[in-house]
Amino acid sequence: MLGIFLFSCCVALLYWIHKYYHTFWKHLNKFPGPLAILPLGNFLQMTLSMEKNFKTMLGYCRQYKYNDFRFYGGLSPYLLILKPESMEHILTNVEISSKEGTYKLLRPWLGNGIVVANGSYWHQRRKMLTPFFHFDIIKQYLPIINNVGDRFITHLKKYSQTFEVFDMQNLGQRVTIDMLSETAMGIKLNALDSNTSSICDKIHALGELFQRRRFILLYNIPMCYEYTADYKKQQLYIKEIKVFIKN
Image 1 (tube, one colour):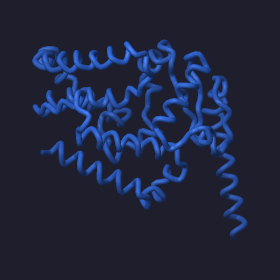
Image 2 (cartoon, rainbow, N blue to C red; image 1 turned 30 degrees about the vertical axis):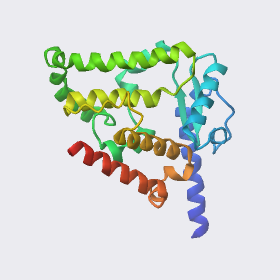
Image 3 (cartoon, rainbow, N blue to C red; image 1 turned 90 degrees about the vertical axis):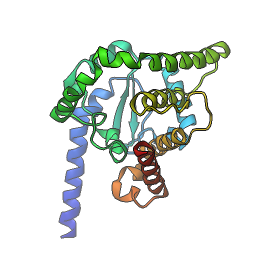
Image 4 (cartoon, helix red, strand yellow; image 1 turned 180 degrees about the vertical axis):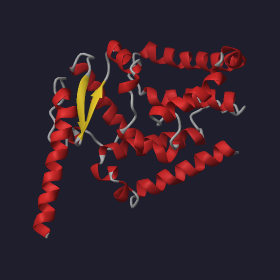
């Protein structure tokens, strides 16, 4: 019986590899990319530090002259889009803009809302939200949006004067939080100009955990991840963010 079970597992694995090869790897390998060793992919080139990973990916962008390139997270294939025409093709084609893979890791935090939803569910929710983005409604929030936008540009000018390479993610998080908190909740957090913001720190920490989970193979298995310290931190941060939003 054990022999039959192992044989069945091998057949299933070979079928999965064959299917993946024809649907992803065969086409993805037409693009340039760093050397990948399956089943680890490019995990050996990455670390648990978001800052170091950012610099590594920036190095690949320069190496491939800012053209699209492939990357393997274990057996999971990724195509990093850098060319504007490639991005335009993807964003304007509903059939190829499904959200799977790493988007599933966001569901404990964001649920199955419009950010991670697909297909008819996404279209239904998107249609419901459309009236709220009418110009007459958005117009009343323009002073807030313009104010935050001006402050954002001021920060960018500081970096442009020193030609310093910086991680846009943290700055982008603070811009988004300032806009959403003041327009949606009527609360002015001033996160963009403050180095100490509890909600920003928790969102940034969640981002760190999300990146760590992407680059640790066992963390991608829900049963394994639920027994880790990272999972406990994730649940704590999500709870605290939800309490902040409700209050």
